[in-house]
Length: 442
Ligand code: SF4
Image (cartoon, rainbow, N blue to C red; front, side, top):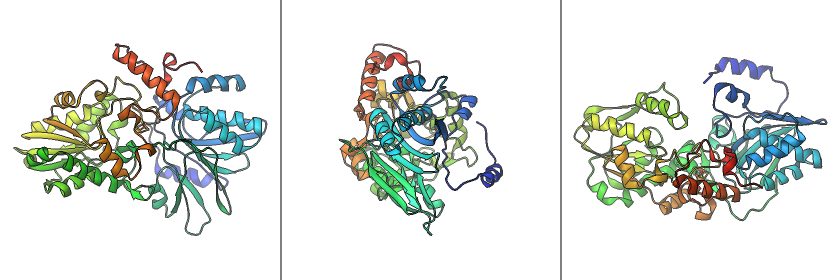
Protein backbone atom coordinates (compact mmCIF):
# COMPACT_ATOMS: atom_id res chain seq x y z
CA UNK A 1 0.00 0.00 0.00
CA UNK A 2 1.27 3.50 -0.77
CA UNK A 3 2.18 5.51 2.31
CA UNK A 4 1.69 9.27 2.46
CA UNK A 5 4.10 11.33 4.54
CA UNK A 6 2.50 13.43 7.29
CA UNK A 7 4.52 16.45 6.16
CA UNK A 8 3.11 16.06 2.63
CA UNK A 9 -0.44 15.99 4.01
CA UNK A 10 0.18 19.12 6.11
CA UNK A 11 1.60 20.93 3.11
CA UNK A 12 -1.34 19.87 0.95
CA UNK A 13 -3.85 20.95 3.62
CA UNK A 14 -2.26 24.38 3.67
CA UNK A 15 -2.90 24.81 -0.05
CA UNK A 16 -6.60 23.89 0.07
CA UNK A 17 -9.04 26.78 -0.43
CA UNK A 18 -12.43 27.15 1.31
CA UNK A 19 -13.76 26.26 4.73
CA UNK A 20 -15.56 22.93 4.21
CA UNK A 21 -13.91 19.58 3.65
CA UNK A 22 -14.55 15.84 3.68
CA UNK A 23 -12.28 12.81 3.57
CA UNK A 24 -12.21 9.12 4.24
CA UNK A 25 -9.85 6.38 5.30
CA UNK A 26 -10.99 3.75 2.88
CA UNK A 27 -11.71 0.21 3.94
CA UNK A 28 -12.50 -1.70 0.78
CA UNK A 29 -15.62 -3.83 0.59
CA UNK A 30 -16.42 -3.17 -3.07
CA UNK A 31 -14.48 -2.86 -6.30
CA UNK A 32 -10.97 -4.11 -6.92
CA UNK A 33 -8.24 -4.16 -4.28
CA UNK A 34 -5.15 -3.56 -6.46
CA UNK A 35 -3.18 -0.42 -5.80
CA UNK A 36 -4.36 1.43 -8.93
CA UNK A 37 -8.05 0.78 -8.17
CA UNK A 38 -7.63 1.78 -4.54
CA UNK A 39 -6.07 5.09 -5.58
CA UNK A 40 -8.83 5.66 -8.16
CA UNK A 41 -11.45 4.92 -5.52
CA UNK A 42 -10.03 7.47 -3.09
CA UNK A 43 -12.77 9.54 -1.49
CA UNK A 44 -14.34 12.00 -1.68
CA UNK A 45 -15.87 10.98 -5.00
CA UNK A 46 -17.57 13.60 -7.12
CA UNK A 47 -20.34 13.97 -9.70
CA UNK A 48 -21.40 17.02 -11.66
CA UNK A 49 -23.98 17.91 -14.29
CA UNK A 50 -25.78 21.11 -15.44
CA UNK A 51 -24.06 23.32 -12.90
CA UNK A 52 -24.84 21.02 -9.97
CA UNK A 53 -21.96 19.37 -8.15
CA UNK A 54 -21.67 16.86 -5.36
CA UNK A 55 -18.73 15.42 -3.43
CA UNK A 56 -19.31 12.64 -0.95
CA UNK A 57 -17.42 10.49 1.47
CA UNK A 58 -19.06 7.31 2.58
CA UNK A 59 -18.83 4.44 5.05
CA UNK A 60 -20.85 1.27 4.49
CA UNK A 61 -21.67 -0.92 1.54
CA UNK A 62 -24.22 -0.85 -1.27
CA UNK A 63 -26.06 -4.12 -1.93
CA UNK A 64 -28.13 -3.32 -5.06
CA UNK A 65 -24.97 -2.57 -7.02
CA UNK A 66 -26.15 -3.88 -10.42
CA UNK A 67 -29.51 -2.13 -10.35
CA UNK A 68 -27.92 1.25 -9.52
CA UNK A 69 -25.15 0.79 -12.04
CA UNK A 70 -27.68 0.23 -14.83
CA UNK A 71 -29.69 3.29 -13.83
CA UNK A 72 -26.57 5.48 -13.64
CA UNK A 73 -25.16 4.25 -16.98
CA UNK A 74 -28.34 5.44 -18.71
CA UNK A 75 -27.84 8.99 -17.40
CA UNK A 76 -24.03 9.19 -17.29
CA UNK A 77 -22.55 7.73 -20.47
CA UNK A 78 -19.15 6.15 -19.90
CA UNK A 79 -19.76 5.95 -16.16
CA UNK A 80 -16.92 3.96 -14.67
CA UNK A 81 -17.58 2.18 -11.44
CA UNK A 82 -14.61 1.96 -9.10
CA UNK A 83 -16.45 1.37 -5.84
CA UNK A 84 -19.88 1.80 -4.31
CA UNK A 85 -19.16 5.40 -3.25
CA UNK A 86 -19.41 6.25 -6.96
CA UNK A 87 -22.83 4.62 -7.06
CA UNK A 88 -24.17 6.58 -4.09
CA UNK A 89 -22.72 9.85 -5.39
CA UNK A 90 -24.16 9.43 -8.90
CA UNK A 91 -27.52 8.16 -7.66
CA UNK A 92 -27.72 11.22 -5.43
CA UNK A 93 -26.83 13.42 -8.40
CA UNK A 94 -29.57 11.88 -10.56
CA UNK A 95 -32.15 12.65 -7.88
CA UNK A 96 -30.68 16.10 -7.25
CA UNK A 97 -30.96 16.91 -10.98
CA UNK A 98 -34.58 15.76 -10.99
CA UNK A 99 -35.77 17.67 -7.96
CA UNK A 100 -33.13 20.44 -7.60
CA UNK A 101 -33.67 19.83 -3.93
CA UNK A 102 -31.08 18.09 -1.76
CA UNK A 103 -33.57 16.97 0.88
CA UNK A 104 -35.81 15.24 -1.61
CA UNK A 105 -32.77 13.70 -3.40
CA UNK A 106 -31.44 12.24 -0.15
CA UNK A 107 -34.87 10.89 0.74
CA UNK A 108 -35.12 9.02 -2.57
CA UNK A 109 -31.63 7.59 -2.06
CA UNK A 110 -32.63 6.36 1.37
CA UNK A 111 -35.63 4.63 -0.23
CA UNK A 112 -33.89 3.17 -3.27
CA UNK A 113 -30.40 2.19 -2.13
CA UNK A 114 -30.26 -1.18 -0.36
CA UNK A 115 -27.40 -1.44 2.09
CA UNK A 116 -25.53 0.47 4.75
CA UNK A 117 -24.51 4.06 4.14
CA UNK A 118 -23.30 6.79 6.41
CA UNK A 119 -22.52 9.69 4.11
CA UNK A 120 -20.95 13.14 4.47
CA UNK A 121 -21.15 15.47 1.48
CA UNK A 122 -20.81 18.95 0.02
CA UNK A 123 -22.82 20.63 -2.75
CA UNK A 124 -21.60 23.15 -5.37
CA UNK A 125 -22.65 25.96 -2.99
CA UNK A 126 -20.52 24.62 -0.17
CA UNK A 127 -23.56 23.25 1.68
CA UNK A 128 -22.34 20.64 4.13
CA UNK A 129 -24.58 17.68 4.94
CA UNK A 130 -24.61 14.12 6.29
CA UNK A 131 -27.10 11.29 6.35
CA UNK A 132 -27.57 7.69 7.40
CA UNK A 133 -29.44 4.78 5.84
CA UNK A 134 -32.89 3.98 7.28
CA UNK A 135 -31.49 1.20 9.50
CA UNK A 136 -28.52 3.16 10.78
CA UNK A 137 -26.18 0.22 10.23
CA UNK A 138 -22.90 2.16 10.35
CA UNK A 139 -22.06 4.83 12.90
CA UNK A 140 -21.94 8.58 12.21
CA UNK A 141 -21.89 11.30 14.83
CA UNK A 142 -21.86 15.09 14.87
CA UNK A 143 -19.86 17.47 17.02
CA UNK A 144 -18.53 21.03 17.31
CA UNK A 145 -15.37 22.88 18.29
CA UNK A 146 -15.31 24.54 21.74
CA UNK A 147 -15.85 28.03 20.25
CA UNK A 148 -18.72 26.66 18.09
CA UNK A 149 -17.05 28.00 14.94
CA UNK A 150 -16.48 24.58 13.37
CA UNK A 151 -18.89 21.66 12.92
CA UNK A 152 -17.91 18.12 12.09
CA UNK A 153 -19.21 14.64 11.30
CA UNK A 154 -17.26 11.52 12.07
CA UNK A 155 -17.77 7.76 12.11
CA UNK A 156 -16.41 7.60 15.61
CA UNK A 157 -16.31 9.93 18.59
CA UNK A 158 -12.58 9.24 19.06
CA UNK A 159 -11.73 11.57 16.16
CA UNK A 160 -13.85 14.34 17.68
CA UNK A 161 -12.08 13.84 21.03
CA UNK A 162 -8.58 13.97 19.63
CA UNK A 163 -9.37 17.20 17.81
CA UNK A 164 -10.79 18.78 20.95
CA UNK A 165 -14.37 18.72 19.61
CA UNK A 166 -17.48 18.02 21.68
CA UNK A 167 -19.87 15.34 20.53
CA UNK A 168 -23.43 16.56 19.99
CA UNK A 169 -25.33 13.48 18.82
CA UNK A 170 -25.29 10.22 16.89
CA UNK A 171 -27.33 10.55 13.69
CA UNK A 172 -30.60 8.64 13.75
CA UNK A 173 -31.36 6.04 11.06
CA UNK A 174 -32.97 7.81 8.09
CA UNK A 175 -31.83 11.24 9.28
CA UNK A 176 -30.36 14.07 7.19
CA UNK A 177 -28.36 16.75 8.96
CA UNK A 178 -27.32 20.01 7.31
CA UNK A 179 -24.86 22.54 8.69
CA UNK A 180 -24.92 26.32 8.64
CA UNK A 181 -23.25 29.04 10.71
CA UNK A 182 -26.06 28.55 13.22
CA UNK A 183 -25.16 24.91 13.70
CA UNK A 184 -26.85 21.62 12.84
CA UNK A 185 -30.31 21.28 11.38
CA UNK A 186 -31.79 17.80 11.78
CA UNK A 187 -34.49 16.27 9.57
CA UNK A 188 -35.96 12.82 9.98
CA UNK A 189 -36.66 11.84 6.36
CA UNK A 190 -37.55 8.16 6.77
CA UNK A 191 -39.02 6.43 9.77
CA UNK A 192 -37.79 2.88 9.54
CA UNK A 193 -39.50 -0.14 11.06
CA UNK A 194 -36.29 -1.08 12.83
CA UNK A 195 -32.85 0.19 13.71
CA UNK A 196 -29.99 -2.25 12.93
CA UNK A 197 -26.68 -0.93 14.23
CA UNK A 198 -23.74 -3.26 13.42
CA UNK A 199 -22.98 -5.44 16.46
CA UNK A 200 -19.50 -6.19 15.11
CA UNK A 201 -18.50 -2.56 15.70
CA UNK A 202 -18.61 -3.34 19.43
CA UNK A 203 -16.56 -6.52 19.19
CA UNK A 204 -13.87 -5.52 16.71
CA UNK A 205 -14.28 -2.66 14.33
CA UNK A 206 -14.65 0.46 16.45
CA UNK A 207 -11.94 2.01 18.56
CA UNK A 208 -12.37 1.21 22.27
CA UNK A 209 -12.21 4.91 23.12
CA UNK A 210 -15.23 5.70 20.92
CA UNK A 211 -18.76 5.96 22.28
CA UNK A 212 -21.96 4.78 20.67
CA UNK A 213 -24.82 6.34 22.56
CA UNK A 214 -23.24 6.97 25.92
CA UNK A 215 -21.10 3.90 26.53
CA UNK A 216 -17.47 3.57 25.57
CA UNK A 217 -16.79 0.56 23.35
CA UNK A 218 -14.12 -0.33 25.91
CA UNK A 219 -16.75 -0.70 28.65
CA UNK A 220 -18.85 -2.94 26.42
CA UNK A 221 -15.84 -5.16 25.65
CA UNK A 222 -15.02 -5.46 29.35
CA UNK A 223 -18.56 -6.68 29.96
CA UNK A 224 -18.14 -9.17 27.08
CA UNK A 225 -15.24 -10.61 29.08
CA UNK A 226 -17.25 -10.84 32.30
CA UNK A 227 -20.00 -12.61 30.36
CA UNK A 228 -17.55 -15.15 28.93
CA UNK A 229 -16.21 -15.99 32.40
CA UNK A 230 -19.74 -16.33 33.81
CA UNK A 231 -20.94 -18.42 30.88
CA UNK A 232 -18.04 -20.91 31.03
CA UNK A 233 -17.44 -21.79 34.72
CA UNK A 234 -15.92 -25.22 34.07
CA UNK A 235 -13.26 -23.79 31.74
CA UNK A 236 -12.49 -21.06 34.27
CA UNK A 237 -12.05 -23.72 37.00
CA UNK A 238 -9.57 -25.61 34.81
CA UNK A 239 -7.45 -22.63 33.81
CA UNK A 240 -4.32 -21.08 35.36
CA UNK A 241 -4.17 -17.76 33.58
CA UNK A 242 -5.61 -15.42 30.95
CA UNK A 243 -3.76 -14.18 27.88
CA UNK A 244 -5.20 -11.73 25.35
CA UNK A 245 -4.73 -11.41 21.63
CA UNK A 246 -3.53 -7.80 21.52
CA UNK A 247 -5.18 -5.41 21.20
CA UNK A 248 -8.82 -6.18 20.55
CA UNK A 249 -8.74 -9.03 23.10
CA UNK A 250 -7.25 -6.82 25.85
CA UNK A 251 -10.43 -5.15 27.10
CA UNK A 252 -12.37 -8.40 27.37
CA UNK A 253 -9.36 -10.00 29.15
CA UNK A 254 -9.79 -7.42 31.89
CA UNK A 255 -13.45 -8.47 32.19
CA UNK A 256 -12.56 -12.17 32.33
CA UNK A 257 -9.97 -11.42 35.03
CA UNK A 258 -12.51 -9.50 37.09
CA UNK A 259 -15.21 -12.16 36.90
CA UNK A 260 -12.93 -15.21 37.23
CA UNK A 261 -10.23 -14.06 39.66
CA UNK A 262 -7.61 -15.57 37.32
CA UNK A 263 -4.43 -13.64 36.62
CA UNK A 264 -4.25 -11.85 33.29
CA UNK A 265 -0.63 -12.19 32.18
CA UNK A 266 0.53 -9.55 29.72
CA UNK A 267 2.60 -12.26 28.08
CA UNK A 268 1.49 -11.59 24.50
CA UNK A 269 3.00 -8.48 23.00
CA UNK A 270 2.30 -6.73 19.78
CA UNK A 271 5.10 -5.46 17.56
CA UNK A 272 4.81 -1.71 17.69
CA UNK A 273 5.91 -1.15 14.11
CA UNK A 274 3.95 -3.89 12.33
CA UNK A 275 0.82 -1.82 12.04
CA UNK A 276 -1.32 -3.67 9.49
CA UNK A 277 -4.68 -4.88 10.79
CA UNK A 278 -4.44 -8.59 10.02
CA UNK A 279 -8.20 -8.87 9.48
CA UNK A 280 -8.13 -6.75 6.35
CA UNK A 281 -5.12 -8.39 4.67
CA UNK A 282 -5.14 -11.16 2.10
CA UNK A 283 -4.85 -14.73 3.42
CA UNK A 284 -1.09 -15.43 3.11
CA UNK A 285 -0.14 -11.92 4.25
CA UNK A 286 -2.52 -12.23 7.19
CA UNK A 287 -0.88 -15.36 8.60
CA UNK A 288 2.61 -13.91 8.10
CA UNK A 289 1.61 -10.60 9.65
CA UNK A 290 0.07 -12.14 12.76
CA UNK A 291 3.16 -14.33 13.15
CA UNK A 292 5.45 -11.30 13.02
CA UNK A 293 3.12 -9.02 14.91
CA UNK A 294 2.44 -11.03 18.07
CA UNK A 295 5.24 -12.27 20.30
CA UNK A 296 4.69 -14.52 23.33
CA UNK A 297 6.79 -14.58 26.48
CA UNK A 298 7.63 -18.30 26.51
CA UNK A 299 8.45 -18.87 30.18
CA UNK A 300 5.14 -17.32 31.25
CA UNK A 301 3.05 -19.83 29.32
CA UNK A 302 5.10 -23.02 29.67
CA UNK A 303 3.10 -25.80 31.32
CA UNK A 304 0.09 -23.49 31.83
CA UNK A 305 -3.61 -23.94 31.12
CA UNK A 306 -4.48 -20.74 29.31
CA UNK A 307 -7.66 -18.86 28.44
CA UNK A 308 -6.99 -16.71 25.37
CA UNK A 309 -9.35 -13.81 24.75
CA UNK A 310 -10.05 -13.01 21.11
CA UNK A 311 -12.55 -10.58 19.54
CA UNK A 312 -13.82 -12.84 16.76
CA UNK A 313 -13.01 -15.81 14.57
CA UNK A 314 -13.61 -15.09 10.89
CA UNK A 315 -11.44 -17.43 8.84
CA UNK A 316 -9.71 -19.05 11.80
CA UNK A 317 -6.21 -18.75 10.36
CA UNK A 318 -4.98 -15.98 12.68
CA UNK A 319 -6.28 -17.70 15.84
CA UNK A 320 -4.61 -20.89 14.62
CA UNK A 321 -1.24 -19.11 14.48
CA UNK A 322 -1.66 -17.94 18.10
CA UNK A 323 -2.55 -21.45 19.28
CA UNK A 324 0.42 -22.92 17.40
CA UNK A 325 2.76 -20.36 18.99
CA UNK A 326 1.45 -21.18 22.47
CA UNK A 327 1.76 -24.92 21.93
CA UNK A 328 5.31 -24.48 20.64
CA UNK A 329 6.17 -22.67 23.86
CA UNK A 330 4.84 -25.47 25.99
CA UNK A 331 1.32 -24.34 26.94
CA UNK A 332 -0.56 -27.30 28.39
CA UNK A 333 -4.10 -26.31 27.46
CA UNK A 334 -5.42 -23.52 25.27
CA UNK A 335 -9.04 -22.37 25.55
CA UNK A 336 -10.24 -19.58 23.26
CA UNK A 337 -12.81 -17.12 24.64
CA UNK A 338 -14.39 -15.26 21.72
CA UNK A 339 -16.45 -12.14 22.34
CA UNK A 340 -18.36 -12.17 19.02
CA UNK A 341 -20.62 -15.23 18.56
CA UNK A 342 -19.89 -17.71 15.76
CA UNK A 343 -19.98 -15.97 12.38
CA UNK A 344 -22.12 -18.12 10.11
CA UNK A 345 -22.87 -15.82 7.19
CA UNK A 346 -21.33 -13.02 5.13
CA UNK A 347 -21.59 -9.31 5.82
CA UNK A 348 -23.18 -7.32 3.02
CA UNK A 349 -22.98 -4.04 4.90
CA UNK A 350 -19.35 -2.95 4.95
CA UNK A 351 -17.20 -5.49 6.75
CA UNK A 352 -15.04 -7.40 4.31
CA UNK A 353 -16.27 -10.92 4.96
CA UNK A 354 -18.62 -11.19 2.03
CA UNK A 355 -18.64 -14.87 1.07
CA UNK A 356 -19.67 -18.06 2.86
CA UNK A 357 -16.52 -19.86 1.74
CA UNK A 358 -14.13 -17.66 3.70
CA UNK A 359 -15.95 -18.14 7.01
CA UNK A 360 -14.87 -21.09 9.11
CA UNK A 361 -18.14 -20.86 11.06
CA UNK A 362 -20.34 -21.17 7.96
CA UNK A 363 -19.56 -24.86 7.56
CA UNK A 364 -18.07 -25.96 10.89
CA UNK A 365 -19.50 -26.42 14.36
CA UNK A 366 -17.80 -24.89 17.39
CA UNK A 367 -16.16 -28.24 18.21
CA UNK A 368 -14.87 -28.61 14.65
CA UNK A 369 -13.46 -25.09 14.76
CA UNK A 370 -11.60 -25.89 17.99
CA UNK A 371 -10.12 -28.95 16.32
CA UNK A 372 -9.12 -27.06 13.16
CA UNK A 373 -7.30 -24.31 15.04
CA UNK A 374 -5.77 -26.76 17.52
CA UNK A 375 -7.45 -25.41 20.68
CA UNK A 376 -8.79 -27.52 23.56
CA UNK A 377 -12.05 -25.57 23.38
CA UNK A 378 -13.56 -22.54 21.71
CA UNK A 379 -16.14 -20.68 23.83
CA UNK A 380 -18.21 -18.04 22.07
CA UNK A 381 -20.11 -15.39 23.98
CA UNK A 382 -23.87 -15.97 23.88
CA UNK A 383 -26.02 -13.78 21.68
CA UNK A 384 -28.07 -12.60 24.65
CA UNK A 385 -24.91 -11.73 26.59
CA UNK A 386 -23.61 -9.70 23.64
CA UNK A 387 -26.85 -7.78 23.21
CA UNK A 388 -27.23 -6.98 26.91
CA UNK A 389 -23.66 -5.72 27.19
CA UNK A 390 -24.13 -3.24 24.31
CA UNK A 391 -27.09 -1.58 26.03
CA UNK A 392 -29.10 -1.92 22.80
CA UNK A 393 -32.17 -4.12 22.32
CA UNK A 394 -32.14 -7.17 20.03
CA UNK A 395 -34.26 -5.32 17.47
CA UNK A 396 -31.87 -2.35 17.41
CA UNK A 397 -28.81 -4.32 16.27
CA UNK A 398 -27.73 -5.91 13.01
CA UNK A 399 -26.49 -9.40 13.82
CA UNK A 400 -27.05 -10.85 10.36
CA UNK A 401 -23.66 -12.55 10.16
CA UNK A 402 -24.38 -14.49 13.36
CA UNK A 403 -28.12 -15.07 12.98
CA UNK A 404 -28.69 -15.17 9.19
CA UNK A 405 -31.40 -12.48 9.52
CA UNK A 406 -30.53 -9.49 7.34
CA UNK A 407 -32.27 -6.17 7.97
CA UNK A 408 -32.66 -5.22 4.29
CA UNK A 409 -34.71 -7.28 1.81
CA UNK A 410 -32.25 -7.66 -1.07
CA UNK A 411 -29.39 -8.68 1.24
CA UNK A 412 -31.63 -11.37 2.74
CA UNK A 413 -32.50 -12.72 -0.73
CA UNK A 414 -28.87 -12.80 -1.87
CA UNK A 415 -27.66 -14.41 1.37
CA UNK A 416 -30.38 -17.10 1.30
CA UNK A 417 -29.87 -17.97 -2.34
CA UNK A 418 -26.08 -18.10 -2.07
CA UNK A 419 -26.19 -20.16 1.10
CA UNK A 420 -28.29 -22.74 -0.69
CA UNK A 421 -25.83 -22.82 -3.58
CA UNK A 422 -22.81 -22.85 -1.27
CA UNK A 423 -24.12 -25.88 0.61
CA UNK A 424 -24.64 -27.61 -2.75
CA UNK A 425 -20.96 -27.05 -3.62
CA UNK A 426 -21.12 -23.81 -5.64
CA UNK A 427 -17.81 -21.96 -5.63
CA UNK A 428 -18.19 -18.26 -4.90
CA UNK A 429 -16.18 -16.10 -7.30
CA UNK A 430 -16.22 -12.86 -5.31
CA UNK A 431 -18.20 -10.83 -2.84
CA UNK A 432 -21.82 -11.96 -3.08
CA UNK A 433 -23.27 -8.56 -4.05
CA UNK A 434 -20.70 -8.37 -6.87
CA UNK A 435 -21.64 -11.71 -8.44
CA UNK A 436 -24.29 -10.84 -11.03
CA UNK A 437 -26.04 -14.23 -10.93
CA UNK A 438 -26.39 -13.97 -7.12
CA UNK A 439 -28.48 -10.82 -7.34
CA UNK A 440 -32.19 -11.32 -8.16
CA UNK A 441 -33.38 -9.13 -11.03
CA UNK A 442 -35.26 -6.05 -9.86
S1 SF4 B 1 -23.71 -8.55 9.07
FE1 SF4 B 1 -22.41 -8.58 10.90
S2 SF4 B 1 -20.64 -7.34 10.42
FE2 SF4 B 1 -22.20 -6.91 8.89
S3 SF4 B 1 -23.30 -5.12 9.63
FE3 SF4 B 1 -24.41 -6.88 10.38
S4 SF4 B 1 -23.48 -7.35 12.37
FE4 SF4 B 1 -22.13 -5.96 11.32
